[in-house]
Image (spheres, rainbow, N blue to C red):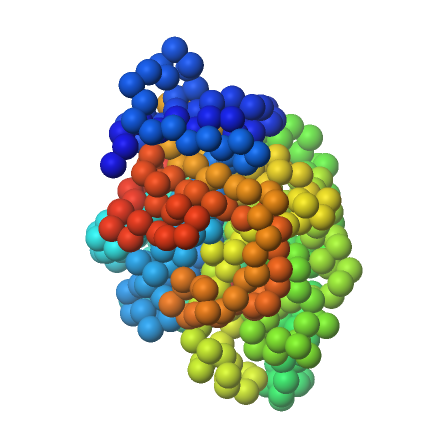
Length: 445
Ligand code: DOR
């Protein structure tokens, strides 16, 4: 295996913008100083290609332990490598749920044995585990399900939420769909009969009420807070108002995330895709797609993540409301966004900001998210002209399907390095590579 690799002639997406410079990978780190470019084991001519920092996906569900018939840390991370994702942060709704420090450490141990790329795990909040949340280390932060989703993690009692925001210090993120609104909508629709009912039950109001509630708590308790998977225009307007009210970006406590499925799908897609586009929060309307794109472009939303949430096709085939919510996306998210760049919807620099730099910043990740001297050599080389179709039969996720099956995209990752090791060469994933535990410096944030 080469110890030093020189990547020549690529257009590099550096923090300040694109530049054509050579990048050396040495002992797992990025070297930008040309004087060091001696004793090179391997040279890659990347003429015509773009070099990006490896993608950091801050919201995935890899189902390990307990639900490994859908995905596991090995198959999920293999899909990451092929998709240009070098770091994932995984959610606590596994079985057992990650709601104790012991469960968190068990997951870290499991990932050290199984994960091809770098990993971190959230600790999940319950109404009664504040002591665990206070003790937790080696984690990006706390996840609260303010609305219920897959699994039984739910904290919607005000008193419990107040305690979590008041008595913990780790950054918090939340699934924001108001449980009372969802239950009342479901009752009106007799539980729901078809997939379109899903978006009527988990409606705009449910998302907005919960997002406002969580943001209000965070501001009152001066707690850093990340709104996961924003799905409505109204939430974008609300977040934009918040930003305007805090003019100094360094003083802002609130950040937000959008997922490709909420950018690309809307209720019109239920006819064609049915349960494949059933997820929580639900997909909304065309006007919401439009506002989410705008919020991403203007910086009201800082992070793109997938909420990769695989279920088997047999599970998805059940009629509504038995069909589970969630879809796999980790191996296609970068390509979907590169294709959007080619269609003029976004710049490549904005992709690097929202898929690399911002998640590293939001979660205090050490040494990742940028092509910078001394940073970890987590890198992805992309070919902006490569055309390829997403096909179920090619998916590496254990669930073996994609809601984008049949979609032709231009712009794909062609090589992925994780800690300086080539883990994807455009065709194959280096299956025996193991990633590292991500380090978080929460004293810096
Ligand atoms: O649709 C979803 N599925 N949304 C979530 O937040 C959870 C996820 C899952 O774990 O299946």
